[in-house]
Length: 358
Image (cartoon, rainbow, N blue to C red):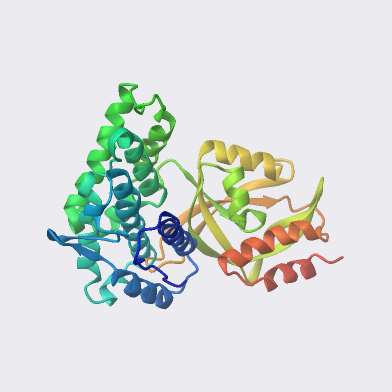
């Protein structure tokens, strides 16, 4: 993970867009949860060096790509506020994954507070006719990247202006939704998107940040993030974990041999932990052939983070009377793709094939 953020000398939409897209990509890479803390700290030190105080109010910092006074209002949202939203969220996500990381960087907490105050400059709204659309898009982004969990962990007083703006935005969207008036100037209906924002935030709390969502532990092809996004559209990645004293095996169902787990002292299985909705779980049931081929089991785990957060997660386990067998290469490749994304040891897949030999 390498910070390549910069400000170009000339205003260029294509260049600005590429810089923002790289920030988004960096945020996604960070949230997979496999980037070492030392590497994240180096990234944050570089990124924070670009947080620029506003000339007229040095208590506000931005990652804007040009002087806002030279920008029309829509470009100001796209290329002044949005880089600040994304960069600030990246720093907040780093805090969630490595809670003590900001204290190990000189001035990082104060700089983040200034950036969060900068985020509040438009109360997260868009510009002109896109006012409501801009608010929905910003709150979708913050919600998807669990900003509410950061507020819970760091405390509302960390940056009270940001916490209040976030809370006010939720209240506004909730009121607007209840009046069935979540429509843009040109008639675009944002009701479904707003409902998702409200539901996700309504379920989040410090005591139970996942609310009624169920935690699902993936160890096979559902480590593939693209596959999960398609199969379980409401899901989001919580983190990674290790299941001690279990091992991987390939066993047979109706259509072939697939990964399962079985108790085995001295072994362990790396996992990706997803939060899934009721409809996501129903989709997983169909995919796993529940209850005929796989049954469900819930086990206690600890997330791989500084807090070592205790969770209970759902597993799919193939019925023990299924016979071991060798998998199709295409299935193995789907599993390995997920292993590469999460940085898990691919040798474990080879070992599973060996365990499953006749």
